[in-house]
Length: 328
Ligand code: CUA
Image (cartoon, rainbow, N blue to C red; front, side):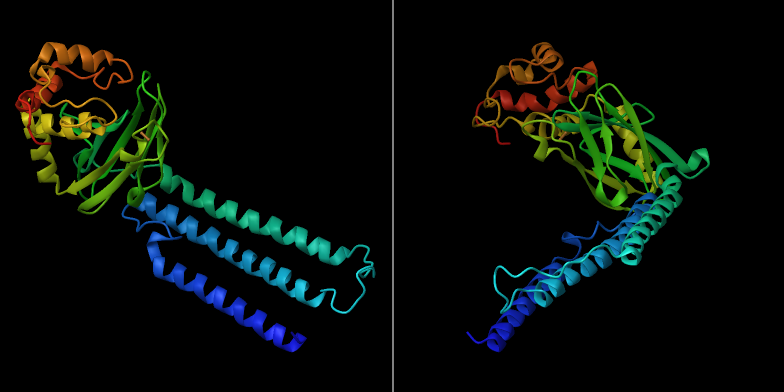
């Protein structure tokens, strides 16, 4: 192939590749490289930092790759003999000084910006007592358990007041493994490290926000997700009041069944654990208490810190499955 034609072919191929990649990235939008849409002041700051750092990364990528391609073309062997030496260059003090100082400055600027943003990410804003609440989040194999200030409990679905500061205590139980609480739109990951408690917060408008476990915690890690349901304060208050009043009722029981048991069990077939349909234990508070609090075989002690009321709640819902053939 003559050189001119070969160059045209190469240039065309390169242009097509770049266009394809660019289209894919543009089409992917927020599902691709960009972080989620932030809905809390701390999440906004994390996104700001992400974008700020990305600008430098993008510019450096273009400069380095551009120089690489330019030099590959400009200094290609061409018609020179394979054995011919290239240019012999010894040092370029000015250039070397420049390419040392510029990265140092870039790192200083990025560092300063991140440290400027950091307090607003970690520290919750001041708020009157009536405008804030505190929710404890426990990571378990393989579910999230939420404890509200009045003692109410929910599983995998956190209910929280809108436009108020919600303090989150992320607890790792000392007998469980590590998990990581991550509500993508409400801030960064906060690890639930066994035996410790970490803190974070959010302040979000009404809406549903997806929560994920971001730490590989065992066979059903991928199923360990939840939702943060942000509702008006009055609705939040009424939810925790009702939940507290029905702390051993089937509403909580159903959450426990779907969020805890069904992570590993089905009624009609073997899943991670054995099929449970028709098992008399599902109606037996005493037997189930022993099993949940101690675990058995490969089953972890999923209910080790459950109250009697919580176990009653589960049985009030699962009793129906002691008869073979129930759905679920
Ligand atoms: Cu819990 Cu992954």
